[in-house]
Length: 66
Image 1 (cartoon, rainbow, N blue to C red):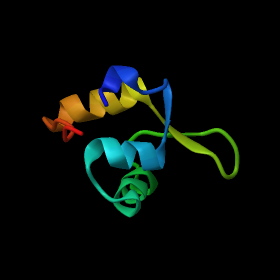
Image 2: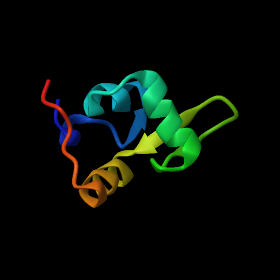
Image 3: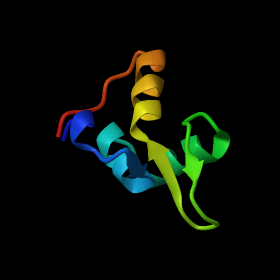
Image 4: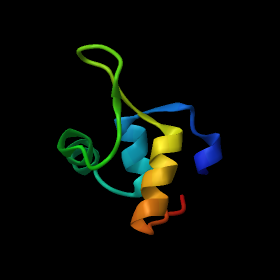
């Protein structure tokens, strides 16, 4: 899975898979504000793909290969 293959708004568990971390760790990144996200409703949170790409570039990280 490459970043370009992901939708424009990515579910947090999918971000976790892409980053190679647990869903709980991905949620901690979102809740702390470290990973940019948007709240679409009270129960729906997504990570914009462009923000994930910028976050990865700023951290000097690359995602794990699947």
